[in-house]
Image 1 (spheres, rainbow, N blue to C red):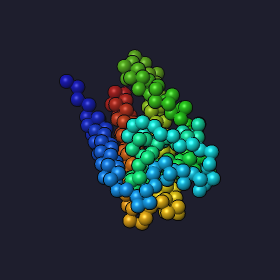
Image 2: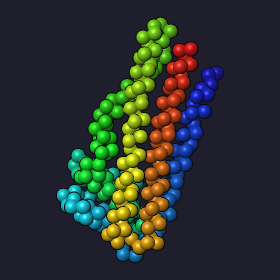
Image 3: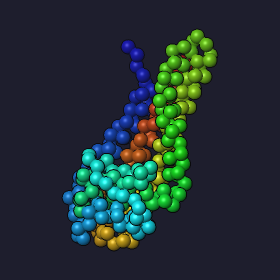
Image 4: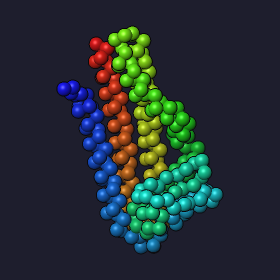
Length: 232
């Protein structure tokens, strides 16, 4: 029986970290979903306040089904807030809504990391589709010709684009959260003691992006180890 120690040593710890991060963000959101803002501001109103404070009156806010499916679509200039955020007056919902508005502000101010991330999306999508097929072909036929070793490394390079995308995502998410918390304070959307709920929710959400990078990096190292082992 074939035992792939590279998965156990490299990938499995990162996957477990990702599962923990996912459980943590859901648990934190549920906890602070119970903490209602004293001003009764909804997620929609919070996002609208942040947008208007930055002169982004043209950006629309729509409701979308699902839980924590919130996102900003720069192509249509629409913020989509999930059912659990759009009409909720919780501190968690206000934090999430302001975070998505923070992404809209990033695009409006030409924040470099988010522009770079948007620019590399087409090539990273292509790379993610080609990566594993190229690596598998390279591994299968490496003994036939050394050319297939290069094919495997090209596949690894393609997968590396996905890691790059995850890496660039980190500063955009952390920055959007910083913008959100600053906007919540400056617009007096939450009282100081209520800020804890928004801050902890966004901190937990940010950890999921750290975990996603860890998984991608672990998978990249695993591919390198598999190809190197087969080459030797």
